[in-house]
Length: 410
Image (cartoon, rainbow, N blue to C red; front, top):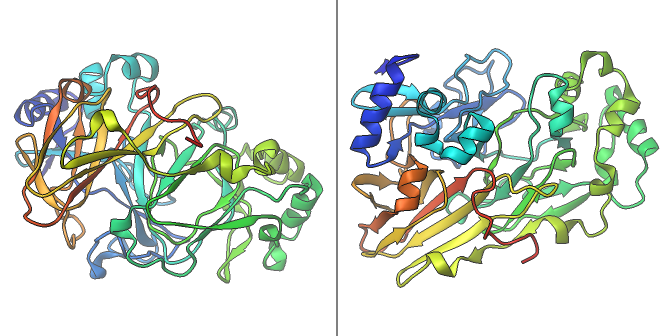
């Protein structure tokens, strides 16, 4: 398949949008993590979880409609970038957005960000990962990066098993002090530094989710997670050992200024202390699906699964559309979206869509698309062609697209 770059992209991207009626077909976008063990629920063939080599780590993530590169050591420059495919040619969604701008993502987002500033992923591990935070916008800017608020939804379709630890630690227990966490960092090379002794684990439930702002500690559990988030890959791991595996100090400090890599007070102060020790943490972050009655009808239901604001801003939202067998639904959205089919088969306008059983690494599928803002506002049809199985799609949106979305706690 020919890969297009630069000036070649605009013409082919326009042709792809015309053929797809404002919808781009996207290829699977696999991302490994060297420090984690794949949970094997994202439909990648069992022989291919280490397709990039054991030195790169197992593939435990699939990124959706991403223009954000993965911050992995030794990664090629396009790792994490989604590719659109049209007539034997491919081009990155990032290049398409750069070439077509508002035509693809809408004028408001293009004028403010000059890019598609969000992405989503499946995050799928056998066990928990270290207690960590993602830097704020201001902190990340110090190292030339962007901050990363994020959200979680646990789709039932990819959670037939919970794997080893379906519980997530969030924040810190009320009463925890900066001195407590500083002592944990001082014990980094002594084995388990004990930071989870100061946190609380919540049992994860398929079909629910969480909204988590920057600088909040969290140790995600082992449910397969759909994660709409800001377009960044910054983090700092505050836990020195997880499941008997040592976490290198470099994964704590990689996105802090170099002159702060040994400054324990700076690293402790980098946490949002008010948010971490919030005694009403669950009330302020937990999400239950909410039916959008204005976008639902006979035989189809559209639910908000990610909603709410982070520090006063709506940065991303997500919906789950379920269409019953034989039903055709007409959907209108306020803005562009990245879409993944998690169950069933059907059509999205004139484009076949289907959730596969198994995917070989490098194989093309029909389960992921990007819907332009113009198409979203004009409307599109989603038809379930199956006789018995519901058709289920997850789609996520960019910043400030859905002012009508619920607030956390609704």
